[in-house]
Image (cartoon, rainbow, N blue to C red):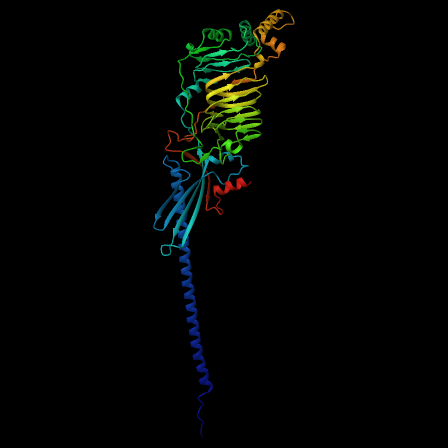
Length: 531
């Protein structure tokens, strides 16, 4: 039986070939999957390395920023600190460094904040730390730290010895020049007086000696009887006896019952005038604040105006009068007026005028209320006829401090300390009557004083007869007991480091790590100004 040969394409051979092809496909698939997994693993490892590098750089930049803040705070507490205009930078390694800057103020404070007055005593410290990739310097991380500190006010700048002596003796008035010092009715100076010139009491009137004696004696009798103390002077008075007439010493000591103290003759001012000062600092290294020039802004006469301190631009409220400055109606100044230039007077001619000296924040661990001067005047401080003013604080005039001749309604309520080369407490022309008139009035007084309906005090009789008010409207009184008049000439910083400290001391107020929105003090000031 003949058999036919099998075909090359038999089903058996085809199946075997197919199985071999599938094996190759499977192997290739496995290889592909392995390659894919290997690539994914490699990619994951590269990403992990990059993530770790980024984390390392971020951590390094943060550590650099902390190092910068630490260095900045150390510098602040040292007398060698360069101030708010200075900056710090340092390389911590070849690829890690910090940059530090200072700014006056606190960007978190707003004008409505109860602590806004602390703005000038705060410093904002910005520290930026950097870390870069050694192989790619353009790849870097940065970290910001913003810290706010506040000055611990422990020590004021030292005062001249003579001023400390003036203050310790509690002088209400201090006249250092040798010119005469007239005091007329109805002026009243309360408290200790330092007088280097010849003092005259009620010299212009009453021109009749008997009327004058009776008037002064009756003022003392009224005081002793509990009718009120309206004597022109209360004393004690410190003066060189060689400068005074014996009759004046007797009048003051006997008739007016004033304690008198003999002192050496001297003609030196207790402090030096701070000439040509236009700016000031609160502390060494602090911002320099310009004094607003009043004449340049408002002209030589001020009226319907209130001047006050500004925590941002003028925290002490110091205003410059460059030349003669007249205060007309409705003027209030909360701060210090400093005058210099040509005829640098302060002339008060208006009504509703108020000068209020600035009381400083209390020093750390102290309850003393230090107050800056209300006015530092190169030439004269004059209260004119018809004025109505109130002064709270010390006024220093390098020539005259005067109540000028004026009408009966002129008022000056002065509480503080008047310090000047010369002083004039002048009277009212309406009281300057003839000798005959004074004599006739004294006769009329004596005729009625013993009657049941009469008055036994000459001052009260004249008030009823001629409207001569013995209750003074021009008064100089000591400041409130808690006020200490501090002398500052503004050429040096107000606050300095305490002798026991290596430098200024600061309290930490705020710490912000990598703040999302960096607000600079300048931006905060601009925002406040726009508002």
